[in-house]
Length: 346
Ligand code: DAH
Image 1 (cartoon, rainbow, N blue to C red):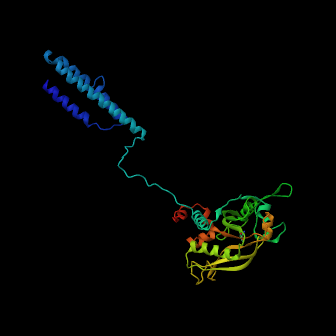
Image 2: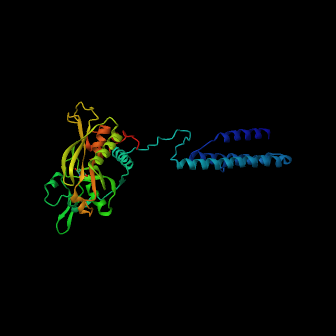
Image 3: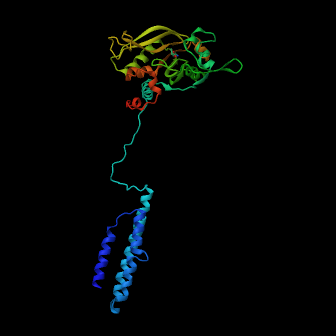
């Protein structure tokens, strides 16, 4: 009897040593302890050798032992089932978590947000227009009637080019949004219009069949070229820093009169001359001018009462100057090594 109790203690220790199990070891445990030839059965068999007066007490001990075995078996079975769910691998909850990749903003998106934020401080709202446009909004209303030679300045992707069904195209500039805005809204108008534009160009480091522009339009009473100049000067200083200089060169755009292109002093060589500024010390960043009276008339805005200025700039060019990106193709290749480099805040 004493020997049997010792033996039971040993069994209990053995049982405790089982921690987690696979389905197989749980089954092994069951056969070893609870099977027809198992340990529980065999210790129960010892009852017949026990003196009658001790049977009650011994019976209790054996029942408790049996319960311990059964509970352990349940535990093992459960833990083996959990393990199967995690594909058999023991999961270590103390391991550090995987790195959480948050991604970063596209450089053009950073530049776009900064442009919006600067102009919004001067009271400019953001306006958007369609990328698939009709001939009138992209060209006609902007003072480029059919057969106007200036249409050749921009190689257009036509979607439909028949008189009967109408002329539909991918907008070649964001100036179409000027038209869309003036159609709906009368002065005072102060908007900037960021968006994607398309031109039929062979893709290379310096040219792309799509790129991004930001158009600006301000129409009100008493708007002069001085307003245009100071607005753009404020923009340039906020964008590139207060040391940057600007200059205007006379130019031609059908929708503005007079027209001017604006250059800024080269940020890369600071005026000494480099490949980006073609050794001139200046880089062109936008086209601008006073809104042509005909354009205002096209939208029933009286040019004798109202005047306005407009400008259009390339976002990729701003990005190139800020981040030194020298190949236009990088913006749309989705190469993670390129995209991960931009962490600029808005
Ligand atoms: N639309 C012109 C282009 O794509 C840019 C431009 C020039 C826009 C002068 C303007 C402007 O609003 O006044 O080349």
